[in-house]
Amino acid sequence: MEFVEPEVYLIAETKIDFDQLESMLGSVGDKTATNWFARTREASKSEGELLTEVAGRICYKSFGVGLNPNVTKIRESSRDYIDNTLAKGDGSIFEHATCTFAFLNVSRVFTHELVRHRVGVAISQESLRYVRPTRLRFWLPPELQDKKKEFKAVVEQAERNYRDLESSYDWEGMNFDAKKRVTSALRRVVPDGMATSIIWTANHRTIRHVITMRTAEGAEVEIRFVFDKVARLMKSRFPLIYRDFEYTELDDKTWSWRPKYNKA
Image (cartoon, rainbow, N blue to C red; front, side, top):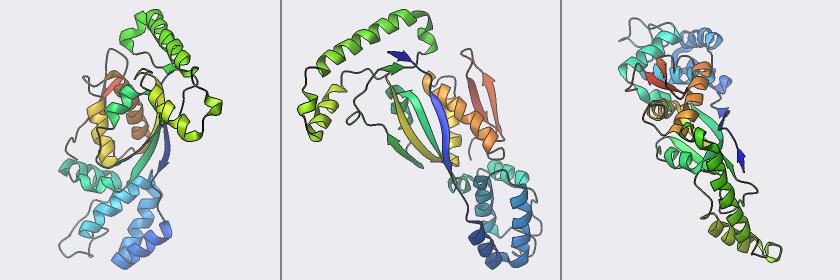
């Protein structure tokens, strides 16, 4: 067996077709809107934040004074605009932009927790129905650090038992369908703690919620460990959408993140 650490990769995020966006803004608000776009695009830190702001401003035609007779002043900066939106709890505009993460070396314990968050997400997980493990890999929780030797012995015995059972089949003589069925049956032997991989796509409203829920002190330790990494990454990559998040360091050295605006 091998000890591993969960890994977090941001592998994709929403991209804007700037030519189409500029044309749309010209139709909506002529020079007022396109001038706003030029200023805001230059100052923007990410396309996800820019798309979020466009989605919000189109609701009131608030790209500038004069487009909507009811609007006599606007928030000029993206920071003020997004901060005000979070404060009001108008979270729907944060659903337009998404991020796609690869979570590697996470356990089935982790993925069973993650898939409980169903709204605004897409999930693709390594299938142990098709993938026959070549070696068993595990992340060791802090509660088991002083039992590392004993933990390893238990897992190695389980792996020996798995290999004995695995070797009793004639894999070379099987077609793919038979291999799939036997692999599916054998996965019932391996522990939930075995490392696996999952791709997770979510919009920013959902990501904010999951960070809040899953880095709480009472959250399962592995998912807190992973979403602490997600939170740090989001704070860096999307500084306006996650500006209100602050952390408290816990005894296990992970950070518990809480937003100022919890109802967005």
